[in-house]
Amino acid sequence: MSGHHHDHDHSHGHLNAALVLTALFAVLELIGGLLSGSLALLADAGHMVSDVVALGIASVAAQIASIPAHKGMTYGYGRAKIIAAQINGLALCFLAGWIVWEAFGRIVSPPQVDGSIMSAIAFIGLMVNLVVLRWLHGGNDLNTKAAYWHVLGDTLGSVAALIGGAVILFTGWMLIDPLLSFLVSALLAWGGWRLIRQTTFELMEAVPNGVNRDEIIESVREIDGICDMHHVHIWRLPSGELAMSAHVECEAMNNWNTILKLLNGCVAGFGITHATFQPEEGPCHTEGDNCH
Image (tube, rainbow, N blue to C red; front, side):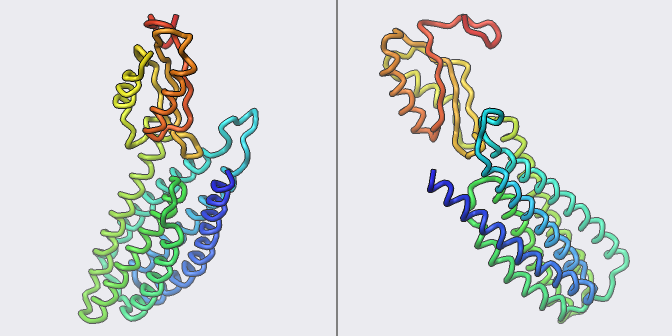
């Protein structure tokens, strides 16, 4: 538990540091975008503001998730991080739509863009984003991954703005600015959709990715003393652990203690650390979800 608590504090500290650094640069990039007239920079600044919101949501959710479980919330508040990740996924999609809308307007009427200011601000932004990415890299929960995706999209936005500034500076081709914005918006939309999909599955307690339910059942059936297994449910707990519940048909109930040890060892090999099994002697005649 102390190791888990240390990891939580470490992750939360990185989220807070990333929040402060990103907020400071968002202001700088917004000013740079207004001075240069660059949509790529303004889009990137808008994304940086969304990063600040995303990191703030992630930080608050991490704090809420650390509240201990009690009799009214037996699993604790860990789902707060999943909800925060879903909000951030939706925010990425909305941001992508806004950038596309603005980019179309600039294709119709391309403004004059100062390539030198655009390139300088974009370079600083790239450095800031790389530092924040390094802080957030390796986070295992969806909450931190959502924040990571926001910053990754912003890093790509900085790269696009840097390329756009260089092209404008050396060729004067203003259309590069909105065209690169389309690319950034597509990447943001893709990341947002992935987060929405993942968090929805987790909130619906779907079988987690990488877990083969049929393979687990087949392995359990090979244990001596077990006839079959049914009513099998596998999901991910708010803590990130895999959980499982099932009805187990045994040849003889007096061997249950031995069978239970073998069962727990078997499912642990699949990464399941929180298992609850209901033993039943002989085949179970089912009617709906009830065993008789």
